[in-house]
Length: 279
Ligand SMILES: Cc1cc2nc3c(=O)[nH]c(=O)nc-3n(C[C@H](O)[C@H](O)[C@H](O)COP(=O)(O)O)c2cc1C
Image (cartoon, rainbow, N blue to C red):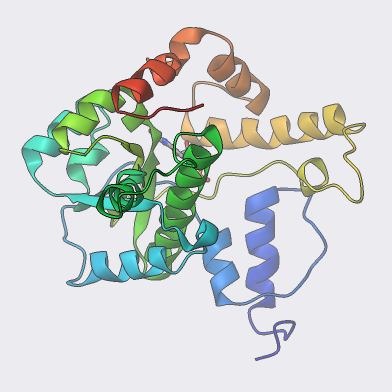
């Protein structure tokens, strides 16, 4: 199929307006995969309906199909369905009830333990293991895998929500899920069907001219572009009764006071407790 064919082109401009508001980028190729990706929104309320049989395995196959640094496959996933465990995880995440509601909750693990075990079985010292670079690669691999699962889930009509708040207390999450040393839940992921009230709408993003640079980094128009985005986000916030009206205010709230880190400022200590030696 010609990606530039007029099929769905009306949907394309509508999708771009939903994503960018007034500052839409020039039209380009389009297809159903891209349409599904541009329609992404995080969902914070789920029906109790289960996901169809085999969904978890399909999402994991999509996750496993993501590129992975040197094919090291530094990630694992833990599907959690035990209500008691989900309750504890929801509490760790600052009482995010959707963790308990969603029919499928997957914890994505930066897993340096599995490859570490090869070092033991092969009786070879892995000099490359205890470095920040290797830890970063494990987190990157876990994120790429999870995002493939998100794209797959959304293409099946399911909705999702990342839960970074698993990192509020990595040690407790680690114990609860009986992870080995050198394994760390980077985030959780709710998967399920949105309730009508929670179906939500596409959240606008910064103009492309703010994030896309050509040949060299250029922030000269950033302030004026941010004002345009703030106006866009103000409209979105008033429709959704969000605390921070503008994006600038959201950044100030999130990055200003240390309390907004919800304990994550102790990450270095937590990682050391989980057996990560990060040089
Ligand atoms: C790694 C990661 C962690 C996140 N953690 C949470 C979370 O704990 N709780 C939550 O409500 N949303 C969480 N989100 C969702 C973001 O708030 C959301 O993606 C962002 O506001 C953009 O909205 P959208 O996904 O609807 O486009 C997380 C997103 C990412 C990528």
